[in-house]
Length: 567
Image (spheres, rainbow, N blue to C red):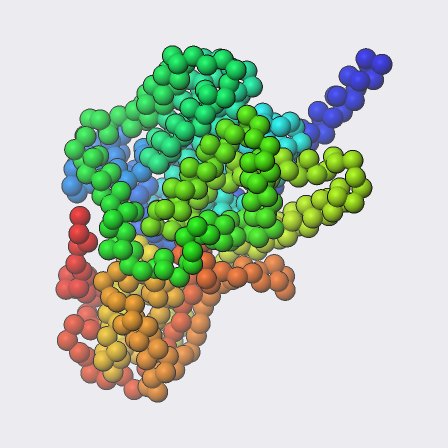
């Protein structure tokens, strides 16, 4: 009997391992699909993601000054908006990959590509891929610690096919790094509740400090640390003190220059805090106004778009179930989910990525409910649960595959540039609305040295000017901090109805899987980074130049029109 039981356990363990490996393989495939998105012929100006300039310049500073300081010159070459952990990991990945990157022929990067930018962005993205796949494994460990191997597997599957986490793995940004260490910290905290020990609580503190060392708002992990200490059968105040001290020490270990250059760090931190709170409207305008009730934002957008409605239903139901049961291990997860949900809800800045740290813990609670329903002794509830979960898994996989394929498409901005190159004569005037910035950088794709740029600044009277073509990026409807929304709407309406203009092309990508398409237009703007929508209008009878409208070069336009943002 013992031998038979041992054999069954061995087979069961082998099956769990096989399923976990399949889940990790699927996670890796989703995250590597289109990993070179937008990098062909790219430069720091023609970057596909607005924040990927950071790895390019910080890596440049590291090499130029022979120092790992992200702030070698306060005021001009300084970046403390992120914690340094991701930057150091990505820089290490860059050094590791350098022999292989050197083998990539220039023809694969594009004739106008900045090789240093492409290599920096790709190294950062691959760092995100590695840590995002590691998060899938760590979610398995978290689910295993909370409620067993089946919950661990289902949790890992949920995270593997989470569209928002797949998206963030395609970016050279700290999000995937943060989420990995956050998940690891929650795992260590739950392990402490299971088997209290100083080492486990200190490990949770170290991992929480590393998460905060990637993004500062992860300091909120002190709440589940305290909850784990409070919920454990053994409570020693000294253990909690050591855990919090470990958090601070780990943070400082990966951000030493924050202390060495305190004034610059404090100024950057204060600026970031203000732009996300009291100065949010100045920074972002009214782009968040259309997202409905604040308390529904996380469910409707980061979850509704980020994982799909089917998985969202299971996650919300999982939280409700955990609140009803209130087991000690569930309470550790809830002590993270609820305060962080409140933080994201109250924050005026509604970027979807800010809610991504909720997904691993929500996946575990959803998996718990799912496994409970699988083993109920009643046939019909069990049948309904199995059918509903399979449908949710099928829908979510299809939905996230449809979104992931956006990264395999040619960037719409590059396609628009190709269209102009094929239809406009060299020296033509090409019209835009705003001078380029990180998100609205379409002019850099189009102009080059062949065309003269014109910028309307959303003034309808300038439509009679000399521009042969006018290009509109759909992002202009929301990203216009210096112009009132009413003026923007009036201009875009005038352009679409003006008899002197006719629409000649529209370039846009939507999530699609075969004949099925999924909505994206109404989502928050960071969900649409790989899906710019470009409309091109032809000017039937171009007129004469108007003062302040057209310029011989982009450099001249920036000299005249650029106004530095308030600091």
